[in-house]
Length: 103
Image (cartoon, rainbow, N blue to C red; front, top):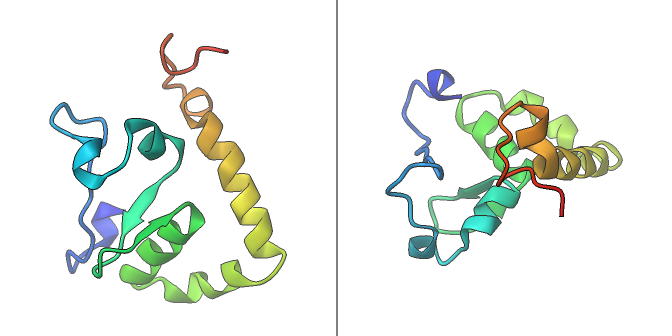
């Protein structure tokens, strides 16, 4: 996504960085790990698929966004993202004993 952001409209934050402190944002590390978070210029938090919609719109791909708001498609994307988010480390091969332990 960074290479599409030619106008530098998006500020990316690496939540895996050693100096990242979730408490600075009044969130827990688990909240950030459970699903993607974004923050709009007015300070409002957004999560899940809406973050991707805003990112795509910010880099000029807005026409790809509107179909994702249609009933049915919107619900399917939300559900699919929730399944992916909870399993993304395993699905992307980034599991460690601590991150993918079955509880």
